[in-house]
Amino acid sequence: MGNQDVLLDAEVFLRTATRFAAKRSTFDRSAVEALASDIVAGLARVAERGARFENPVIDDGSLAAFCDVLVQPAPDAALDFIRQRRDAGLTRQGVYLGYIGAAARKLGEGWDEGRLSFVEVTVGTGHLYALMRALRAEGPPGGQPYDERRHALFATVPGETHGIGITMAADLFREAGWDIDLQVGRDHDGIVAHVETLQPQIIGLSLSTDHRLQDLIRLVVALRMTVPRAVIGVAPGAELDDAQITEIVDIDLLFHDARTACADLDRLVRLRG
Image 1: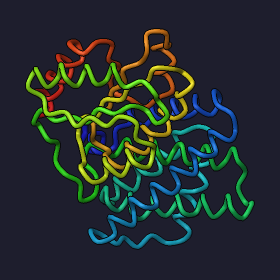
Image 2 (image 1 turned 90 degrees about the horizontal axis):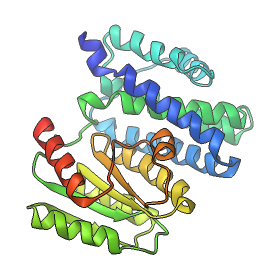
Image 3 (image 1 turned 90 degrees about the vertical axis):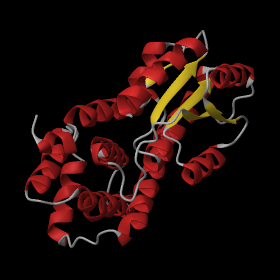
Image 4 (image 1 turned 120 degrees about the vertical axis):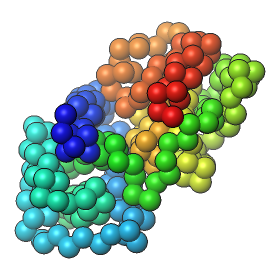
C-alpha cells in the first residue's frame, strides 16, 4: 500500500459515501436536508478553526471544478480529484482548508441562492463528509493524538428517556478500570459542545428505540466532524435491527452487552496505543 493510500483511505471514503446515500433513500427530505445543513456548517467551521495552521491558495476555477465533481451521483470523481491534488503535493490541511471547507461554503451558498437542487446539495455534502472521514489517518488539523488510556464518554442519544442501561454499563466499565464520563439526558448541542471541549477518543452511545435513529445519525455525523479519530460505538435496544444501524449509521462498533463491549474496547486500545 502506498503512502497516498494511507493518507486518503479509499475504503473509508466509499463505505461512508454508501452509508450517506442510504440515509437519503431511507429518511424524508426534511431529515436529510437538516443533516446536509449540519455538514455544510460543520465542515466550514472546522476549516475556519484550522486556518491558523495553513492558508493554501486555491484558484476559483479549481474550486469550481471540485464542486462540479462533488455533486455527481457516483463518488469516484470526487475521490479521484482529491487524490490528484494529494499526488501533486497538497497537504491534508490544504485539502481541508482549500477544498473541503471552501466547497462546503460554496454548496451552502448555491443552495441558499437556488443554483443547486436538493439532490445536488445532499449528494455533494455526503461526498464532502466521506472525504473528511477518509482523510482521518493523519489526524485532524491541530487535533490531539489518540489517547491510549482507558477513558471513554458514554451518552444517551438526544431525546432518549431511558438511561438505566447505559448507567449500568458505565458502572461495569468503571469496575474494570475504565474512567467513564457519563452524560444522560443531554440534547444534541449539549453533547457536541461537551465533546468539543473534552475531545474524547472513545464514545459509546445508547439507543433504545428506532424513533431516535435520525437523532443518532445526526449526532454521529456531528461527532465525526468534532473528533474525527474517535472510536464510536452504539448499544442498540434488543428490538432494533443491527443490519439497519450498521448500514446507515457511521459507527465503528455495535455493543450488545457491557462485558463484551469492554473486551472489544480493551482490544482497540491495545491496537491503537
